[in-house]
Image (cartoon, rainbow, N blue to C red):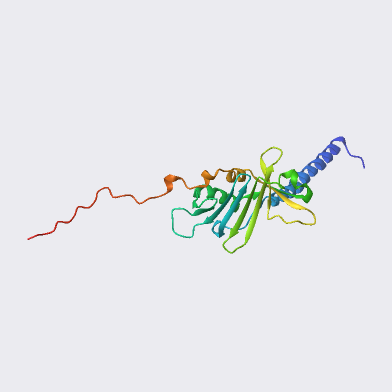
Length: 207
């Protein structure tokens, strides 16, 4: 059976359109779903679950503990000094730990961690929950274009390597601070104001 030129063109167009639909809609949707799955929550605990944090950078090791007593500060610095913490700064870090997501996960041989800056990390965050469970986040260097940060969450060696995460560079901004930034601002420390006027003595009746 012979086909006319127009019929052959229509058949080729139909085949081309079918291939486009398959690769873009079906296969492409599968790939997009895989990428979506790769973007996962780093930790599953809630902010109220956290009892203490230890932030270790190349310049400072800071121990923070939740203030369980009624006071002006939700968080206290336990070392290297003992003072109320800057709640806004701690909350910024806590928000990243609770809501932060890994953009991608790379299965990496343990002997290649140095390439990601994870053998001598720029920071390590240790988290202790109220139920005594412990978590850890290790922050390495930035990726090739500086848009994300290499990290490890609860690093565990596996037969196929170690999972390296790609996380927001906001983590770097959250931990690389001077000690003075972690302390509660002086303006936030409330003091009991003195009364503007002192009460006059009550006169006594004398006979």
